[in-house]
Amino acid sequence: YPVRCDCYLYLISVDIYDVIAYSFNQFCLCLCVLLSGHQFSLLLKDPDQPENAKSLKVVIVGAPNAGKSTLTNQLLGRKLFAVSEKVHTTRSRAVGVLTQDDTQIILLDTPGLTTPIKAKRHHLEESLLVDPFESIKEADLVVVLVDVSDKWTRNKLDYEVLKCLALKPDVPVILVLNKVDLLKNKTLLLDITAQLTEGVVNGKKIRIRGAEKPHQKLAAKPHSRHTEEPHSESMKDGASQEGQDKDRLSPEELKALKSRRGWPLFKDIFMLSSVDREDVETLKRYLFEGAKPGQWQYHSEVLTDQGPEEVCISTIREKLLQYLPKEVPYSMTQQIEIWKESEDGVLDVSIKLYVKKDTHMKMVIGSGGHMITRITQEAENDLMKIFLREVRLKISAKLK
Image 1 (cartoon, rainbow, N blue to C red):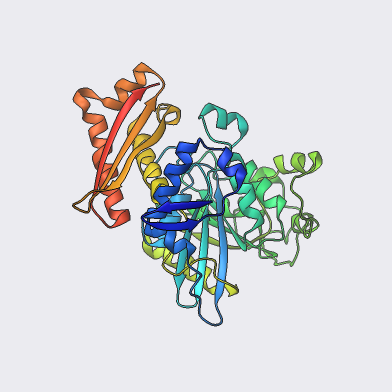
Image 2: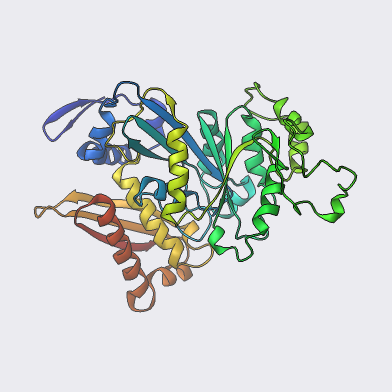
């Protein structure tokens, strides 16, 4: 489609099915925003890779609120993706690009794995059910993130995570135990590790004293905790699936996964706090060392594949999740009404929030407009840090 913008003629290749998904006005707005942004021109540039270039595509998966976006931001050294204490802050797959010397790491920050029932309860898009599973298919390395501060979930891998891993058992996987700074009793990390790995790391039995519970009745196996064997039974079970490139698991496989607590095919284990720069630097070095010779996918100046309007929407969503209670932020939608650069060089952005209930509207506005003012100011400050320029943000709300 030829599109005239700023006196230049662009020839844009657009999939007709993508066009159908939007109204004509929404499509034109989105296209003009992209064309006017420096980000879009960077994405069009050919990768400026050196000779002997290396690359690694990393997919980060985990249960909701495990800290995936926080870890991705820390690896990138800059906050690009929304973060909040509530679940499902990330609504679709986001790409972060980390380029250093001759190596490019592509980080795929996926939504927290969820079920159709939970997706309906939180008014979530279908992308939250699909994106993590699609991302696994193109990964060179999978990072499974577990929140060890949550005593209810830390001793068992999420069922949806296990499904992801079982779909592509041939892809290397590492386990990252996150939020260790919030764990008072650090010795619990040994027990958690033993359960999540089923006692096997990189094909060998790990030596952890006290990892097994008395009721497991493993006393009859004197070598179970002290010997290193290349392959355990659980390892063989996982390895038997290798080489199978299936889009879905059989009912028998799904049933078997429900009884599993861990995964015996982890290559390595990291224990860290994603808010600690030094901790994350160790993981970052590991990723760069694991990169293989391969073509870069992006220009070295690209940090993300997200357009500026996507970053803006997710930043505002972060504030809504942070300050509004329960289901209120999940039932709201946003629409960009104004996106333009003023004569004084400031980016003017106007966002309309559509609220479903009158009670929700009162919460959004707050006493004397305090709440919506606070959300606007904090989102504006974050956007100025992300875009490295002055931003004037206006947020209004409407009952719909």
